[in-house]
Image 1 (cartoon, rainbow, N blue to C red):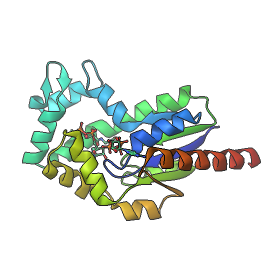
Image 2 (cartoon, rainbow, N blue to C red):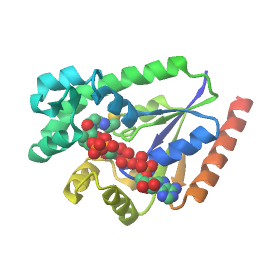
Image 3 (cartoon, protein in one colour):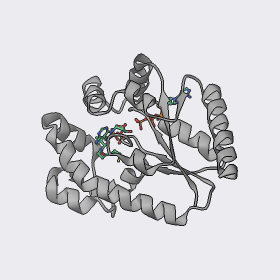
Length: 197
Ligand SMILES: CC(C)(COP(=O)(O)OP(=O)(O)OC[C@H]1O[C@@H](n2cnc3c(N)ncnc32)[C@H](O)[C@@H]1O)[C@@H](O)C(=O)NCCC(=O)NCCS
Ligand SMILES: Nc1ncnc2c1ncn2[C@@H]1O[C@H](COP(=O)(O)OP(=O)(O)OP(=O)(O)O)[C@@H](O)[C@H]1O
């Protein structure tokens, strides 16, 4: 059975970028946000249930993220409604990935790993981190969220320090080269552990 490595961190801390580095090191990667993108797209699994619960969120056969963000801004409980629909579908997608993967290390990029208790299903957890100011600047530089939307999401997440304290490894995502070095060191450590098991 493959080693299951959880990869988490708060919004904009560098999960996707770090996941690419694990991929380059020969790990298979599953990305929870990417799974959500697939299921919001035309013919995706979440379109029909979201259409029933939040009819105005579906436009041209796909779930509109802009519309969702507006609805969440007007009523924060909309995020709970969404999570009830989306999270079971995300779990199905993940099970399909596990059944098809063959690498020695499977990396699960999951923003809400600790918040949903998913850390208990992992053999080890990596948390990515940078100072809060850099995190905020990076997210706002993407131009996909207002500062208020960013703060609303961040407030819902477990604080960064707690996530890091509960993780087996912390990767500082200040530069790409530094992150790559840390990823390679984690992979070497895990491969030694796997061989000695
Ligand atoms: C709120 C939405 C519309 C924002 O879309 P947008 O394209 O702007 O951002 P994106 O999806 O890339 O998310 C950015 C980050 O926000 C954070 N985030 C997203 N959803 C949540 C949530 N329910 N609770 C806390 N943080 C969240 C994560 O850190 C994520 O990486 C979208 O994230 C969404 O539909 N969320 C509900 C589904 C969900 O819970 N996804 C989380 C992974 S399973
Ligand atoms: N090691 C790094 N060095 C420099 N910049 C980085 C590094 N890691 C990430 N970044 C930058 O930070 C921003 C956020 O990174 P990324 O999209 O990987 O974060 P994320 O945690 O997956 O975000 P989200 O939670 O919103 O999905 C991007 O602009 C990315 O280029």
